[in-house]
Image (tube, rainbow, N blue to C red; front, side, top):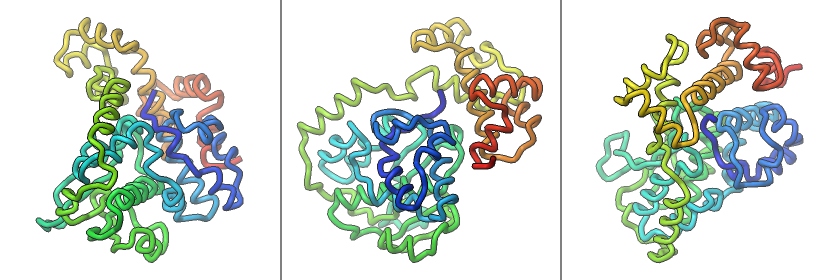
Length: 339
């Protein structure tokens, strides 16, 4: 299974779509997202489908600030078990470190971090929000949702937006610039290397109002006990290697084992201990790549087949029918709301 995200990220989606005159169920069906994902925040949905749905809703409903509107109705609670650990942190720095360590619980494709100021100011740091583009394509609306929520959580923890120097987004403005400055209460720059909140460095040591060392320790221990960091799994590294290699040449377990400096039998034993196998991961990677190219590009089907590791277009067609119950062309039209 490709990268997922907790259904909590869609909190408020149905209500917002209805307010804009749309039908939530039509969007979930179009992107093969179970309808219950809009009601059960603990469930997981494919992050690519999640993000494509946000972009489509914004486009089809004529709402360019869809992501920002969705963020306005959300709070730290969408992070589930991670929320109390962040809330009980002693300082902004500690809260950010906790969020960075366990963000994979919300989605392994997303990360937050602390980086030097991209504009070179020593008294300023960047609180970054990134998506791993090896796992899923870039989505402007999902980025605005994520950074908008990041901003709301920061303000809720600190108590005000004082210290925010500016906001950075990688894409061009989707709405009038005034909409962004109204939401963030600060200058917003576009076409930047990463989505980020530029804040005064001194804010990192600001003490939080809800600090509670015992609660934080219990929350962190529970997170560590219930969730394994994907980076610690052999399957994660195999999947990453296959994502980069599929479509370039036939890939074997021996080749991937050498790349990871393992004996093939050792690699297979480790995957079995993680309740998976090489063939299963390869099938999943080919599925993700094929559906990604079908739904996010206009590439000819023959080229999609080659890039997803199929010998020919017929192989792609048989596989997509098995996965989606429809032809590649039908999947492409469905996602784009055509026909």
